[in-house]
Each structure stands twice: as C-alpha cells, then as structure tokens.
Image (cartoon, rainbow, N blue to C red; front, side):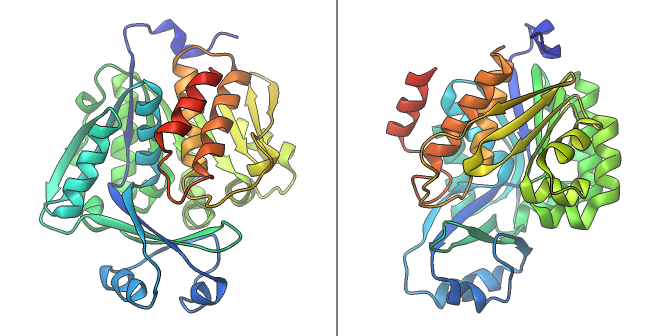
Length: 331
C-alpha cells in the first residue's frame, strides 16, 4: 500500500511541537488520588504550588524525567533511529536543562525557546491499577507565542506531530497547523486526553477536517470526539475527517483505518502493566516511525504495539535501553 509521503524522499525529518514538560511520576494508592478531588485517568491544569504541595503529602520517591505528550513521541522516534526534532519552550532552570539534555540523549534535535518562567511540569499519580492521573503546570511551555512558530521550523520535515494539549492555546495551535501545512509536511494529531476533547470539541473537529492527515485517539478520546462507544463506528467517524485514523484499544490492540480499509493489530504481551504513563505516546512513536520508513500499515501498528508494551513495564514514559534492543530485534 502506497502512502502519500512515500513520494517525498528528500524529506526525512519528523518534527513534534508541544509542551516542554518534565514528568514527575508518583506511585500512590486510590485514597491519595481521591484527596486531590480529580477523576482517575484525566488531566487537570494546576498551578506550580499544587504540584509542590501534593508531593509534600507523599512519602514515596518520585521519578523525574523529560516528558509531555509530543515530546514522549519524538523521544521514541529518536531512539528508533529517526531524524527527530522537538519544538517548544523551556525555563532557564535546572529542570529546563534536564529537559534539553534528555532530548539530546535520545538523538532528538532540540529547538527550544527560553523563558524566565519555570519549566513546565506534569505530576502523574499512578495507582495500583496502572492508571495515571495527570496534574499539569504548563509554566514556560505555555508562553510559546504564535509569531514564534514558522514554516522554517519544519524545514526538511515529512511529518509534523502535534499534541492535542496544544488546543488549550488555540492561537498557537492554529499557527502551528498553518506553519506545518505551509512547509509541505503531513500533520499527525494525537487527541491526548478526553478532557481536551470535551473542552475543545467543535474547533477540534474543524481542525481535523482542514489540517490533519493522521488522527490518533484512544477509546475515551474517540468516544468524546465521535459520540460513539462502538469501536468500528468511532473509527469510521474519525476517518471521515482525515486520511488515516488510528484507534488505540490498550490491551485489546488497535484499529487503523485507511483508504476504506480497516486493519486490526494485536497488543503485545499479556496485558499486564506496571504503569501506563506514555503508553499511547510511545505507541505513536513506533507507528509514525514505521510510516515514514514506508512499512506496511500492519507492521507500523505492530511496531507501535511493541513500543507501547515496553513502556508499560517501567515507571514513567522512558523505555530502558534493553527494551529498545528488544524492539529493534523485532523489526
């Protein structure tokens, strides 16, 4: 099956634009999560002091790693060997330096604007069922201005990956979409969270129809986006608004719709997980890397499943090197 960008061999870079955030992963019980008043599995925007106060209430050690949805995806693409670039804004602080170093360590070119505001952070509370509930302080990442995003940032890019969280800054999202389209790159959009979809439903559908080539969603996001709980109906509704639609189903695998055909891909492993943080983001890493390498769609989905499985075996969204070796051996 020939996909559109296979006709663009001179373009070999995959770029991602999104929030430059540092992930703070905390293993806690349901009672601890309930004290926050937030629904399990969602994402809440919070102030910096909320994260600090919540951490002080826990007696557990937290893992601190570079993160953010689009960043997680591009880090995975870099580790797979892709020509990768990340665009965002960080603070001039220790966490900002940690973030930039993390990009370079994963073979990702950092294009990072700087701010005196603290680097953005995400506190992920991971409960025993491996669900993660996120509390996000956008910090410097929210200060990226529309005029700072131009088509030149996407030079040599075959694909630009955008996280749904960018919809919380509508002007920046529109500037990013326009710049990516002007550059000639294809655009992939990960819906990111059902809370994002619920908050931005109408404009989100318009954006998908006008700009998005590849739309990626999990079950909750697809239900919020389409109104359908039935997987096939939700997938077909998504496919009406883009060229290629992906419905991630966790341990049930994934469904991919393209050109009137639907491909079912099994999940890897037995469905057990230590932590689901970054599972969808890393699934997208494998899938998008495979697409830009010209792999068949089934194989792209299998590569996504392998990445999603490996990240679920550790705390946080960073696959250890032995995991990457297992993934590379499969393909």
